[in-house]
Length: 453
Image (cartoon, rainbow, N blue to C red; front, side, top):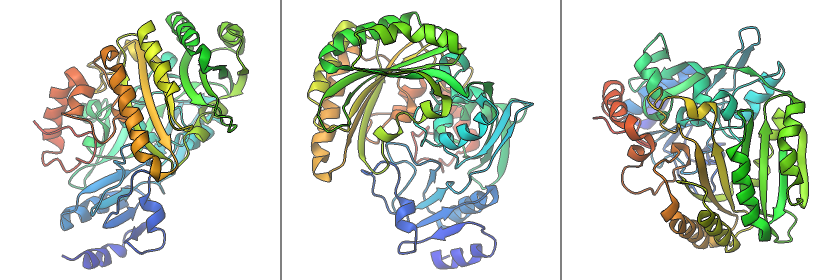
């Protein structure tokens, strides 16, 4: 069957849009957050509901097309799009329903975290979500889901109560602790390997609307001292407190390189004020924007530094420890950073997210420690070679200090070997067995792929 014939057959029932090269909206839709990605699908199916997604899967099978699934399109490796295949775009699927009495929220697969937070915060409720508001709920949750609430309430996937999936044959299943529990185990960390998640049911918790959070900033010349202080604060941080450190360039065109601590305290405002007081007093900082802040504002605090369309190349890895030597390497490497848009981010993992047993979900990232993300970002395509080289050189310099864990959502497209084996660790053999059960042909493979056993 030809593409034109297949589209004509589907048009009578498909409620979304089917976009071909040259159609209005095609070029805008095919582009993802990372401007370095420039792929051209043969067809884009902009879905409005689960039935559209199921029909899109069946269409891909009929035409023997590879598929890529777009939720928020934020994945740095560009796995949400594809050359010469079918992009199944969930972006129009924006439905959100909050049940404040049951403290549950249901959201469709195209929802962004800033949209989800806006609805749940009407009721003073929240679910652990991304630290960047423009990230999609789908990819972040299925791959793990770190966020400001993870020390107190766990990862985003720990809040899942059920998920609706379109399977590789176009059928629809609900996975939960009671229905297909092995599939439910697999999707909580297994990414898009087992089906297309069209809706999520999340548990929510009372949070905000105002919490204690924000950032303090120091000059990079004091970066080593500040990062050692950050390490000390992380060692005694309560579950209520999430701390992230970063190195960045001042946004005022001065070119000044800076280091910062970002905090989010999910307890009472009084206890939050006490918890961040040492951070505010250290230095003192050259800028202090830490105090009462709305939960929604905190979740959008980093959005402007990661603009859509900027060119990105990332490397990320957990450290064995944030040692003095590792700190020295990080500061030295950032001093040589060529782009004012680039950052190095250090995320501290502790608390509830780290206490879940490794085999309780597919996600094996259940440790106390520090995850370093080298975010190389630039605007001019002529700077691509230099931007990629700096990121790779920084990652290579950190190699003696790297641990054995990696966060699947941060893996770029050129990872050597079998990155899924590294990301899933001891859970990988079971995931391969379940992949064989639920997707034996590896239909869903344009991801951090789990190959069927």
